[in-house]
Length: 455
Image (cartoon, rainbow, N blue to C red; front, side, top):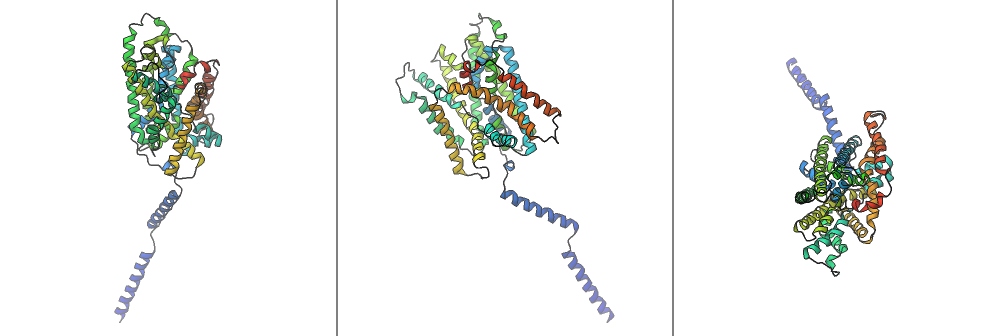
């Protein structure tokens, strides 16, 4: 009897212990459950409140280089030979190097800011620093590429058809051509949801500019022997530096596009994106110098503000120059969607800050924005002077002033005091940039507007 009671008691005790084992969680199980629960809840919160920095980039390193290079290289390359003619080769090279280095350093500041505050939008950095005025100042650049289409496309058609005196044909009207190009080429590319999809068109655009560089180099080699009797020392003596600085500043404007490209980069890190920007700037720096040098060596002091016009003055029906003009038009046209991307997103951030992606709204913003730009191109006959003033102010702000000011305003003093070396360097850039860009003879605004507008 005692044996039976003992066995029953043992069985009962074993059952109770097993039940405790099943219902009493171990410490490590409790921590795992809490971690899983918090992860699940954070996932729910992220789904409810999606953040822009959570976007998964799928654009390769090479495509990002193409996109940023295309954003840097506008049609301003056509005015660099004129800039070299007004400064000389040595001073031009020094100024080009300084602007390229400062541009790369500004990109470094933007990337550092995006890592500190978790913002990957240029206009949002402006909002973080100065509120709504900062967002509007940093988010709405004014693209001037379509003016090149308006003025160059009719001349290309005239040269292909060999029309000495056009008689008012519709296809010789630049306004009609701008609308056609905008609808058939620019609008479909501007409707792309992601900037990375434009990598192929950016690569083709850069190939067109490489062809332009090869053609200019070939023409220079043919002409340098015939023009060697011109005073060669002129190419080393600085003449009018004020003409060059705004052109070079305009030639490196790409900063509103940096953060969108960074967002869509595969495996995005600050170091990886800095490599993208350094490679893009280095390639553009080389192409800029070679294009300016060979264009200048072809015509010396006779070079005009727009290089292709100088070639047309000699032989308007030259086949090589016609092909170069077509290549430049294609390159400029394919650059417009890259420039419109941050502008469209800035408008969406200002008007619909808390809305998720919506195709009808996406298409409507692109159509309205492109329509307004077309109206500006068509109905503003005196736009060259306007763009001369805008180019002298907006380009230095976008490249030099805004990144430095954003850095000083946004980075907390607890992390970097005002006397820290990075903030001292940033502070010194502001007065130097203002002195270089604005303490100039006032007459340059009127005499160099045509050159500024070609970007």
